[in-house]
Picture: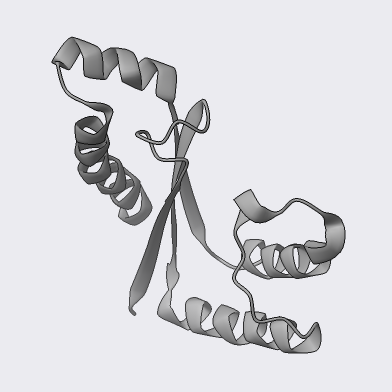
Length: 123
C-alpha cells in the first residue's frame, strides 16, 4: 500500500499579516487520495468551477457550495490530519533571543515542523 502525505502552510512567520502561522499535513492511502481527487473533480464539474480553493480568499458565500462539498468529501474519508499553530509573537521573541531574523527562523521551522507533522502521521 502506498501512502501519500500533503503539507501546506498559511500566514508565514516572516509575513506581517497575522498573529498566527498555520502548518498542516494530510495523509491517506494512495487509493483514497485518487478517489477523492476524482470526486472533487466531479464536484467542480457539477458546479462549473475550475479555480483553486484558498481559505484566505474565502470572503463571501458565493463559493460556499464548492468549499462545503469538497470539505465534506475529504473529512468523510479515512485520512489523518496533523495541524500545528505557531504564535508569531512568541516566535518573534524566540528569534530575538537566538539573534536570527524571522526569515531565518521560518527556514528552521520549515525543516522541523513538517518533520514533526509527518512523523505524527506515520507512527
